[in-house]
Amino acid sequence: MSGGLSVIVPAFNEAGHLAQNLDRLIAVLHASGRAFEILVVDDGSTDGTGAEARAVADRDPRVRVLAHERNEGKGRALETGVAAARESVLVLLDADLEIPPEDVLPLVDQLERDNADVAVGSKYHPQATLRWPLYRRALSRAYHFVTALLFRLPLRDTQTGLKAIRRDVADDLIPQLRSRRFAWDLELLLLAHRAGRRFVTGPVHVRPAARASSVGWGGALQAGFDTLRIFWRDRALARYRTRAARRRRTRVVVSGDDLGLSASVDEGLLQGLEQRGLTSVSVLATGATRDQSLPALQQRAGGADAGVHLDLLDGRSLVRFALRGAPAESLADRVHGQVTALREAGIEPTHLDAHRHAYFMPWVRRRVCALTARAGVPAVRSLRPLGPVFGAGLAEGLKRLVLLGAATLSAGVGRARGLAVPDGFVSAAEAARWVEAGRIPAYARGRTVEVIAHPAVGAPDVPAHEAGTLDRDAEARHVLEPPLATALAGLGAEVIDFRQLA
Image (cartoon, rainbow, N blue to C red):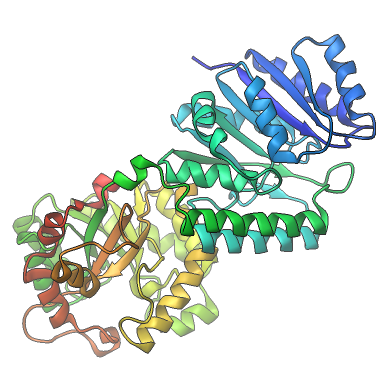
């Protein structure tokens, strides 16, 4: 049954249009049939905002007005509203209605339908619209890039002025916040993420408000300083690592690539599955030995977790693909065709990744994730490398830096589509070093990590244009001696496959 809503509206110097905005909000909420209240928090306004809000409250008892004697910041205003709220679902909405009230109920419905803890309106959602001037777009993108790099949140947008949160979750998290102004939203979402709370995102339709944003350049600089303080509290002081988060086990998917590429690669992957060195494989649907590898997979490792190693290159080099891209129709045809090929062979694909990192460009990854979700495949690989960037040499380090940049720009794209995504990946060689050292390193603890392996057993037969810098014989030793997945379980990791991840 749908719960009641407490809509908290922080307001600072919003006179002249606040009454009209509140009337519009009341009309939308009333039409929904839900119980609701609106709490306007006048944050020390000097222009009659409080009087305008009280006039609305006098004619509608569902509106309450709270006031600060002086301006204390948006975060403090939201906290005041949360403390006074009475309903089971809290909605945080900016008073200027840059985000229309018509976006509120779809986001709340999504929160309840998906049994999530926090729902975040996102102006970067595929169905969102954004009508901001260029300088505001630039500021927003820059802030997103910085926060994605610093905090690795599974969200593309933390600052949009519409969020919904369950009352019990808010009561648990908000007393722990220290920010008082525009970085309050970021700190709330970071704390929720560190506590293992479940997020959903929904689209918003943003248009310029009646008056210019009250953030301005000074507010942007203050938000930047507050963000660095949050980073210090998170990384240096570990203030957001709850006891539950510290106890959380590392989850590991040990995944092998390129089934169907050649006979030696097929043998390495099949032995990995048989001996419990691997938990998952991905099938190169355009590979030379695909027709032989699929029956062998079902015979030797029946029921094993298998995905699609999507070939987007069409015989081109990765550089040519990056420069020329691929039409949307071509991408759709390739995803559909290669997923269908596995299904026709009796294998239901559980995940998707792209051969030779062909979806490292954010605009390609967005399309691929949308097509993956449309095809009913539940998971997609992460682009984010974990661990020492240059530990495997200069060339590998540079490649990982490129992937890290792409992952930062694409943060949250897969999850926004409802896909399961690991937190990041390491190579089989790195995971084998964990086994040798007898411990999981700090950068992987508590995360869901994909270990990516490319083993081959037998006579070398990998085509020269597919060889790259991989030492497939060495990777086979990393996977099989001892069986890598089993060895990681011995270190205390929870070893899973993509089906369990999804």
